[in-house]
Length: 254
Image (cartoon, rainbow, N blue to C red; front, side, top):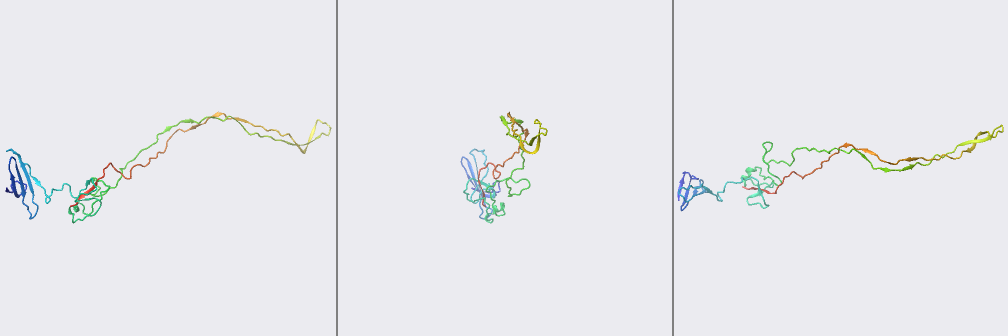
């Protein structure tokens, strides 16, 4: 065992323990710069050949000398469980004690953890957005074109039907009135004169009817080229989504 002082070791002052054998190993315990502060510790080794190089110094981490944060305090972490691990909190819009968690307060100075339920994370654009600002769902502005294809239905023929020969109603029967008659003054029975005011009538006559031939026939109806109104119905979900898997977002308390 020996001491090290500013001679290329990873700590400025400390004690070194060398373990020798077929291969060699060294453990270095640094001296704390502040009374009661945790001491850094390092380890290295080399193989059993004379020209073998020492490995790089590797630091020991302890509960009092934890490793640097691999995930910064305040970062949202996707967590695949409803059970929150110790030292973490679900991100549900709740407040926290800034004095108890000063590192978290640096990330969220308002003392409020963002509510990440139902939200995704998006990289902040180069302009127009602030960190932690919200953006509601929406579609990119776009348009549609739609048309009904023109179809010339031409001239169509209706079905044929034979109406046969039809008769009109019978009508036209009538009579005429004329005055009484007297013989001529000269006794000529071959000449007759009439006097007005008599009550004589001619025999009724004149009834007749007509027949109208209709026969088999058909009609044509012109339709021609034309268009139709097209209605595009609404479709889709209540909000814009992508394929996704649901995780809880958690954040480390520190």
